[in-house]
Length: 347
Image (tube, rainbow, N blue to C red):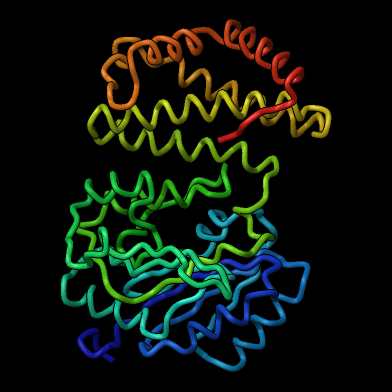
């Protein structure tokens, strides 16, 4: 078949690990799509429940479903790096093992991409709670789906999740890309990188249901993995700096990294007794290495960041991150206060 007559193919990637509770509903929402030229590529991360058996059953039912199983890697970025070479589609979409799509989602995404030639198309996104009315919805920009965003504007809007990342991407966006594997949510950094690579970002009226009521979801639990999530924010900061975004924008992200690092260090100190020695050392080493990167920031650079931060705050963070020994002394004082008050807040 010639390239001129070849049907447009959408690859949907679904990573799976112990997802049997919602997995069938998610797969069924894909199989009910009015746009039928798709492949659903699932990567099972060596589940210990019956997820793999469910996947193999669906693979035998529908030839558009392809199943892979890999040794447990512990996060989605590793599965992304594994599966990218196997995705055959002209465009690529992502969904978790508990998410859903409206039946017309792929069709609406495809039509909008065809008509606009946009590298990135975003459907409406519902923060989905089952059996709950009036779920929050992100739809275009303030409800306007006719907006066409530049790549840089899209990145800025994504920083506070005014737009989401469950997009239909042209497959060329993934070319030569490797997902960082040090944190379970580095795909959030990659979303910003993909937005920056896009020629434009547009919206359509399909609907993606982002499940919020799965208490077993990786985003709903806190463990050692969550400490390394700060590296995602630092990568986003570097992306903003390397591409000369406005200093107020990079400044706000820098202060977010400072504050998150500060809070995680406090939290780790208070929980030292419940962590293994190896886990505690891993976290402390990562936080130390990040401190080294943060202390390279110069005072005059911080003073340029004015939006939402006054000069006193800028000086405070610069002094706190000027020297690691001083930082540890200050954190010891906070540790003593936290122990007395019995409270700590992690952002």
